[in-house]
Length: 317
Image 1 (spheres, rainbow, N blue to C red):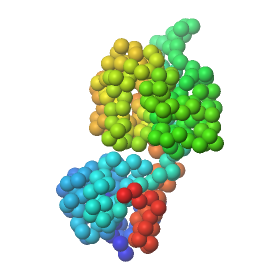
Image 2: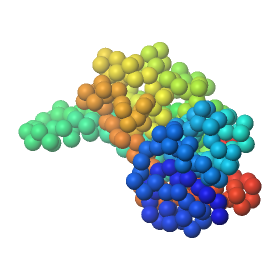
Image 3: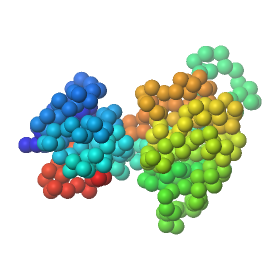
């Protein structure tokens, strides 16, 4: 039986599954392991079931025991792992695509709705118990007829487009390559981010985190947007230059933001907490029982498939 280190606590049914298939070293207290502790616990292990909270960087990869042959990340993203370093050591890295698409798209729409309709301000008024209705009280932006720009038209981006169309939004997108017409379903492709941003009344960031997309929302690119635009992000916090975003909010160039991801989370830029038009969530993209169960099951299946066949369809390196 293969020995597998599970770095974070999983739902009970998923831990039971892991324990049946492997000699699983579970994290019952859901402790966030330091690099040294992760390395110590990985001694004698054949695989690691990791989470985005585990920083498995170049240094960690170099120090992993020779017994470790696979790192199965409990996420669709893998920016926490030095994938190239793992490849050089013949360590397979896998992720959990597809299963979190719908849940993340739902959160993307929640961010769009919350930011457009000033939900944060509304919640704060209700808590004060002294709000008074008037014809111009908390007037927000209506989705119907608004232009939604989607940066990254992969599985999640396409799911967001489908939901947004049901609200009567006009879909625009930028992708590494244009989609086939039958997949576009009427969405308008843009050759550049400048072109996309310039028509985005609302932007939904859904693209992968890469060197090219780091700080793609910055002082210069924010100028491309129509005054009063709304920006939302369900991808990764590294996409946004926080200082530039705060300045754009203060100047009213950007009307509101909806964020589920942040640089250095769980710490976030303190100015976001002071922005009345910031609708912010604690990285809830995949946070449904159905999705988190499917993600963990797939991460477990990736390890099982790899050791059973020597291959795995979700290997990314």
